Picture 1 (tube, rainbow, N blue to C red):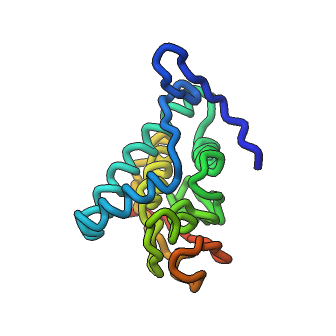
Picture 2: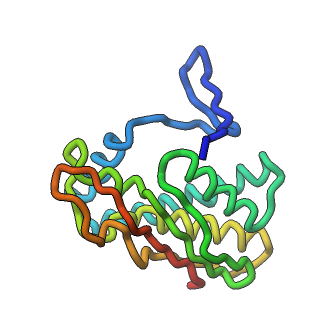
Length: 188
């Protein structure tokens, strides 16, 4: 996929924007190292719920902005969200199924940033569900779809399978997953 993102850089401030939303561009290892160190200091049991809440809020906001910017509605906004995530280097995201009436969806993530960064630039190799940060994003997007359609239903999401759980290269070598991650969104 060749990203065709509209990226504007303000000459006076250096601020990057896409579709009017401010963006940050950084190396993958920088982001993942910060994520891993924060988890190590705070503990996953405290960090994961905070990421979920922040990701949910951010995805909901993003969907609202993009719906207005592009004139999209319902699941088309969610599909656009997955496309933009795919174009921005987070991984390759696709629905296995999605139903705006029931609030149910399954999202497949291949080449997740969290899996690919393992063993590079000091990121430890883990055989665990390391992509949990995405869960709040997928529930937040579905909740926006439901809310925008007039539904009072709200959802939750969890990572059911992670590519990092599968055997890969030794410590210090980049992980090249043959598998993918699966996230399930369902009503609360």
